[in-house]
Image 1 (cartoon, rainbow, N blue to C red):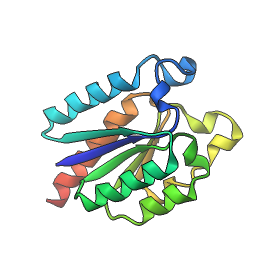
Image 2: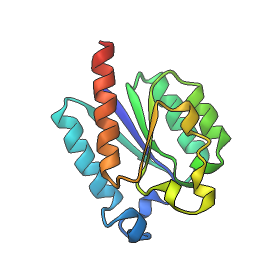
Image 3: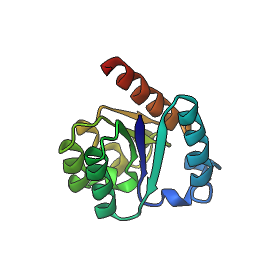
Length: 147
């Protein structure tokens, strides 16, 4: 089974950017730890990060075309206004779980709305890096239930 992890804009700055909201873990550390966890569960994790909306849309489409079992997506700021990413998610049949490291509902007003969440399988917010592990666990279990 293959799962795609997509991190959106500015998440390449994890560990450096606003550690009071996003913690000290770098993107590289997150990807390594999550890949190790995935491997322990016989899952291949493909990691992708982009600061560009079109690249994220292409990755979502390709995941469907390649038969990827599911997607973990942190769309970053695109969460709040990218109808193009929302439509890309809606156009595929693979489950997508939206993850946010910080509790977006406890932050600035503009962060309270997700245009992408309504077309995802679920949303995990405010649990730090652990949210990615919870999303991966959920996708693994959902795929086993479908088998």
